[in-house]
Image (cartoon, one colour):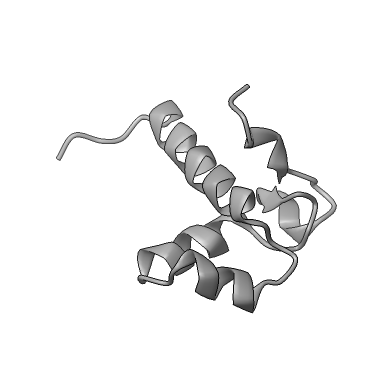
Length: 75
């Protein structure tokens, strides 16, 4: 397992089972979405004080791994 991936948790009894950060009710998708609209790490950490910088990197690694596991249609 890559460093940081253990920070991502999936609990079917929390948030509908979506991947979250360290058991918190902060979905990985929320962090990725904030990054995608141009929010900086410091802005994200200010909005979610329970997050740590390594959590953001773990979300990026998790998203990258998820995309590599997925079969995408050829357009």
